[in-house]
Amino acid sequence: MTDHHRSGGDDGTHHTSSYPYAGFGDGAYPPPPPHAPTAGVAAPAPAHRARAKRPVALIAVVAIVAAAVGGGAATAVERFTAGNAPGASNGVDGTTVSQSSKGTVAGVAQAVSPSIVEINASSGSGESTGSGVIVTADGEIVTNNHVIAGADTVKVRLSDGRTYTADVVGTDPAKDLALVEVRGAKGLKAAALGDSGSVKVGDQVVAIGSPEGLTGTVTSGIVSALDRDVTVAKEDGQGRGRQDPRGNWPFEFGGQEFNGDTGDSRTTYKAIQTDASLNPGNSGGALINMNGEIIGINSAMYSPSSANGSTAGSVGLGFAIPVDTVKADLDGLRSGGGA
Image (cartoon, one colour):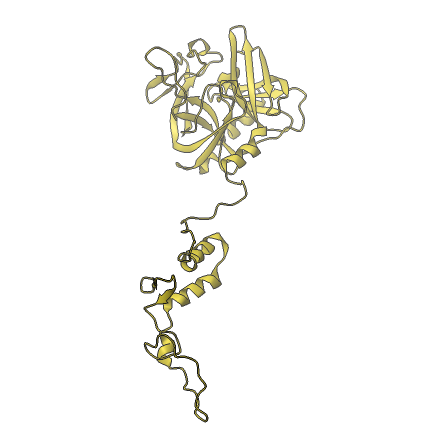
């Protein structure tokens, strides 16, 4: 409305300077004082010309008000009609944020956290901590093969603190996947497995796992890239002695080794790259879209080493096995091996 404005007087009142009042001839401002028409003389009909000069901006505002549906239109109306009112704050462009937690990190965390577990695997050579995703109500849990490889005992801790002993049902070292099942569990909350084929670079994601044994840790980020070739150790137990002091799983990417030596027997898979913060213990946990669906199993992260040999935390280079790979491998894992 570039050609409709107001000017203010010293007394705080506003005077319209660009348009005459409708119904009173050209340029009649202020309107003539009211008086009774001369007897027997009909009042003149309003001029069509004056009617045609009704401000277009006023009509536009009325049209907007009549068509206003939802927060976006309401915001537009507020900016046009109340923006110049004394004490009114300027509107902010954008959509109105829903009061519902659906589609938010908090909403995803609340919905999916009960389906993510902490896994503690122990053997004669030591212990490792990772994460897992519940896929059936009776206790089937998907994790990384490197989390449980070579373990004599596997313990699973649920988000509510309950702890179960679990048995290894099947492993697929070529895909770095494993399936374990807790003993005597019923009524667990299974996660919804999504479609990694529909994932796009830039999609917002949430990661849930147990980094450094901190059960149920939630981080968020975006999908940074797709179809990254990630190479990990293939044989059961291989690489355990080659991990860095904090337990990062060694992997290769782009022709370089990270977090230790992967050994001679290796396998390469296509991974989803994310900048969601991952740390030791996130392996086997979930990468989740904003609908609360699992789109990947977190499997590797880069942790740079400083000059004195100590390691730093996540720098936003994490990798996850696509959930479509997991779904295709489930029947094989249930039979004791991979697809």
